[in-house]
Every structure is written in structure tokens, then in C-alpha cells.
Length: 299
Image (cartoon, rainbow, N blue to C red):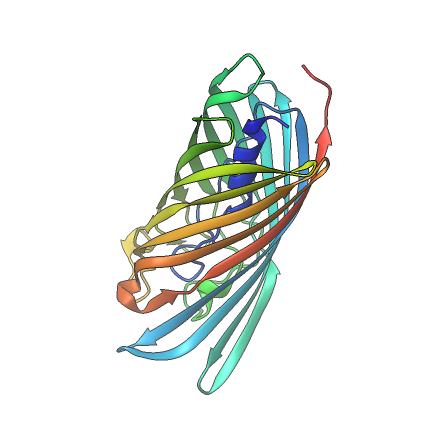
């Protein structure tokens, strides 16, 4: 396997672990790195996230979110990739005097990724990789109007969102490298005039791969930063439920790559956060992912 596939797999395994409560259901999507290989992928990811909500410094509820997601990726040209996902989410809010359960399909997303730079050595290993992606999220998921107190637990936003993404990977040696990614999401309005704030995300991580029998074991560790702007209603900033804030997290993943399969486990832990002026606190998040690799003929 080419080293470049390993970097992409790391990004795939850490995709969209984010704050549903604080910024419009999903964090920005990840492009991933898979340009130098001749594989299509079809995968399934399961994730768990939890939050605590406070009023005047006293916790009054806990939120638990369970996500299931079908992911795909195909290379339609040597420098153009097409990828997307279809999510399903279940959310539980437990309060002192009751609980609520909301589940349904989330908003599907599709991304076109364009390879701008790819330098390879004499063995075909990708040493430097730079790509730029554009994405579109469709309002097909289950959503609610702004007056619903549980709006942020619904799996859809009800709006068309647009994304810009960039990704750079540098392979310093045969067994290790560094990957950095930036993304920005432009949030649209729903049918009630509500608009989640635009969101920015940056992530950097070092990765290293080890030969394990005939397989590859890839470990990665790094940091993730997110900023969510104020929500707006009919063009004006909302009061009391702004969904704004920042969060800085550490991240780590373990990935096992076989001839046809990828198995991934990811954990993300908040180090510093200020969400909704401290009224929301995100806890440790985790996900597992399994993907099947379809080999294609060389172009």
C-alpha cells in the first residue's frame, strides 16, 4: 500500500466529531486524502457524543447523541474525487424531571475534491499533497423551527450549507508524516428564517504507520479547533440561544489496514471550551469506522 493512503485513512477515521449542541448539528466535514491510490471506498461509521447543559452554573440536563453514517468515496478523475455521507442520528436528553428522545435522518453531504499538488518519489509514494474541496449539504434531514426548545437535538438544520476545505499532507519519512486541514462552512437559512452561524475548523496531526504481519497499523495524534459564530433569526443575532463558541480538543486514532478493509477507532477529548457562554460542556467523544476498499484499474 502506498503511504499516501494511510494519511487519508487517518482523516476518514476522525471525521466530524463535533458539537451538535453548539453549532448547527455537525462540525465541518473533512476532505480526506486518497488521491494517490486507485481505490473507491464504502464505509459505515458509528459515533457517540455527550454534553452537559447548565443554567446559572447548575447542571440541569445531559445530552447523548448516537450517530450512524454511510460514507462513500470515488475517484472520477486522476485529480478529482467525489465523496459523501448519509447520516442517521438518535439523541437523548435527560433532565431532573423528564427526558426526550429524537431520532431521524440527518442532512446528506457531497464534496468534490480537487488535487492541486502531488509530489511522489521514485517508488510512487506521495511526499507532498495539497487539495481544495467544495461541498454542499442538503436540508433533507429531520429538523425543527427555532421555537422548539429541543431544536439542537434534531439531526437536520433545514438549510442549504456550503463548504470550502483545504488539506495538506507532508510525508517526512517512510513511516511518519504530518497532516493539516482547514474548513469553513457557510450556513444558510431554514424555512423559518433561522440561520446557524458560520463555522471554522482547523486540525493538525502527526501520524505513523507500523507493519503488522501483512497488515498496516496506523496511529495518529493531534489537535482540533472549532469556532461557531452566532445564530441569526431573520438576519438578527438570536438572544439566549446563540449557539456560538469555541472548542479546542486533543485527538487520537488507531487504524488497522488490511488488503480490503480498514478498521478505525477515534477518540477526541476537549481541552478548552467556551460554548454558549459556558452553558454547554462537551465531553469525550468516540467513533468506530469500517470501510471496504474497491481496487480500480490504474489510469
